[in-house]
Image 1: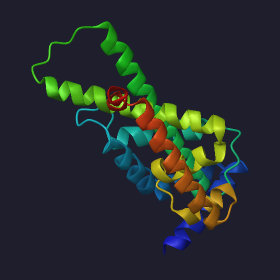
Image 2: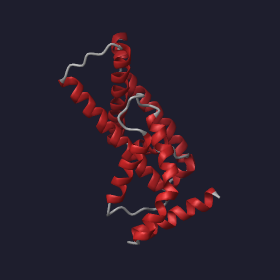
Image 3: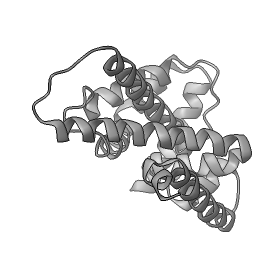
Length: 196
């Protein structure tokens, strides 16, 4: 059943690429559940009172997806990989905006720990985004693998399909990317600065 839906999604994406407006209407209900799963995955990492809920994040990403005119959708995995990238972008942009706003105004908060945790999560998301950008400058492929796996929720086979690589290459590159990110994030964390 899942293989049939995956094949149908790929066929509808190709039809949408070819200018069939009905394909987009048929595609929406097929991808809605998976997009919502991706959004829930992202939102679990956010604070409870985040202004976006999973459905709103899906809607924002979907609006951006359908506005893209020059994307050549290869298959289902490619579509969800791009969707994951868009969701990450939306959340990082919101985190940066929150940081700018919180830096300019004074908030009286009685639950200081809650406020501290919110700032910490925002900083974590921005640090991860910065680290991924740095990794992309060094090795675009590793950065893409991290994004597709961590943010997109794709498995090794799907990532291999999107990037047109073998699964063994994906497994090897994923391990190296994780190690690089671990070192990079720990190098810049406030705790590591106190140790030196």
